[in-house]
Length: 446
Length: 145
Image (cartoon, rainbow over all chains, first blue to last red):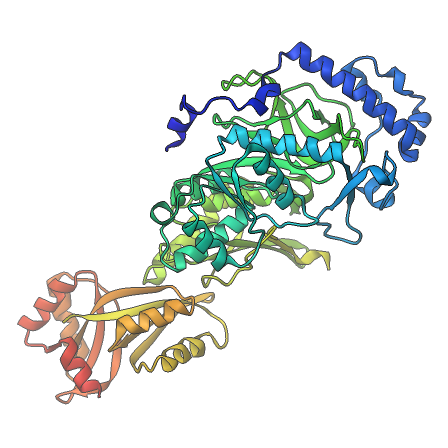
């Protein structure tokens, strides 16, 4: 089914779990305020760090009288989770905690998130509503190839899928051959994984002569956990004929299922009865009005184990307040294709890997197997983009390969205004990922 | 039968050519001739083997990108002005040579060159009408043995 048919398919009724997505705004605001007040009180009563910061500002929970008063509250950052590791931010006794999840921490200590039974249900509600919005129904078979375990991707989508009533195939990551065999043999219709792992599956499948359109029943891809460009999405859809859905979330706020895109793809709807979004100016920390671009901040409205209040995600986005064509009243955030953590400063210019990806993929038949190397020669930063040659891009003569290099270089330069050295490399030589992919090597940090 | 040449993309790094040759050796394939075109960064290896389909499969299984191109093997008098004579024929026919290289063996005491033309059929006809010997697949590999 094409995207357009899917969007207008009247046989896909609104799933009952989606009801809060259509709540009238006044009712939503009232619910949010009620929940915010309870969360602030809970944190103030149980989390010493939060109470200390509130007291320093002279703010008490009862000062939160309207949703706007959220601006009175202190921010939380990733470093707080590290400093208070492992239990400092817990707002409930340990016997109420039923599960820990950890972030895929890149440096030092991981981030530990304590979930009560309520929190697991809130999280599941988010993933169920995301799946329902994507059009996943009980007739679907969903392969969950996100890693199961401490990483929230696997278990998050697993609970969401079971909640919706679709058939879950919990393959977790790894063992690509078996993944492909099960996908084909069991007639899998949806796959949930990182975009880079899906590319890896495509790559391996195609190497074995598999045609995803003919040999599988795959219709939906549920992709998240790492930034990916619109060009990458189009490329994946072109090759496989699936609809690539964008699911957003972060461990600190619960996991996947904080937001997702509907069939109109004009931003991601935030399940804001659970997760309250704000956009702030990252320099002044002042809240910005809807529509303006800045750092995305979330407050968990009904998590009890480890509530996050004004958590700074370091993701750049904006809130799109207009009512969506799909009829949902919950607000949308602009698709996060750039995380401020990933930003590179090259010769004084801010560059996001996703911009380089967009340039690269604007060239026909180039596949997104690339790696970015930043280095310094003397006083000058250098940017190298390694790109794998494919059957489609390799032609027999030097001129057309040099021409390909030049076209990629120009396309990237048009976007970031920096001259990148393009290096063509042999196929299957760049690192593949079975979880979150590392696209950048910055040798300047030595 | 026409002569098919395999071309491979190769990074310009130590050991890469050896790896390609080893893959073919392990598949029991003899390389009749090979040429290397390179830039600072990467190279294109072009080679001619008898069992080209088997060679292609072995190289692809080793993860390489392989292209197949039709080339012409023609004899050239092994004397001063020999090549110039043949090139004049090509020139007159209005065909462009994309690249050329040589075989290690001789055919009827003449040198044998591999040509890649932009218009193979036209070039072959021009060479034949000028009395040049254009080798077909079977003759070529019979000579090679």
